[in-house]
Length: 127
Image (cartoon, rainbow, N blue to C red; front, top):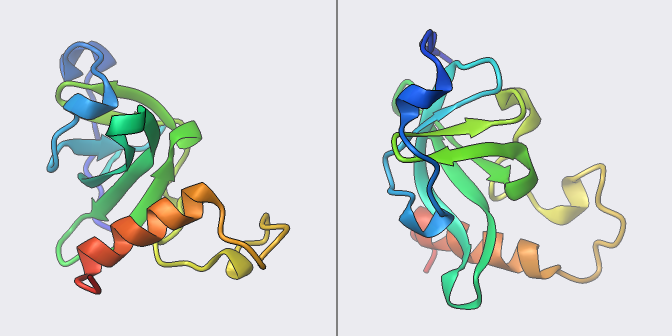
């Protein structure tokens, strides 16, 4: 990944925003301040006020897609998303629950997994 250093203080990203105001294409930075990509899709159910995370399109293009869970996001700001983890802590959105080492019950899909699967289906053109 050809990451760009992000040598500016967080306040240059603008004020904090709600997940519903986050726009596709907003830059995403890891916890070290390195730009890893852009927000491609917000995962959640705004009508129920549920925010599950962000699908990130990594750079340089063509890149790949990674999913940042809500607990891996430190800040949502007007001009950037700051993660609380490094990029290698993120997983691909189409990764199935049984493949995740921290998944305990692969017989049923959790609401988060179902939401993530639907978002990935939309992005990948499966639906």
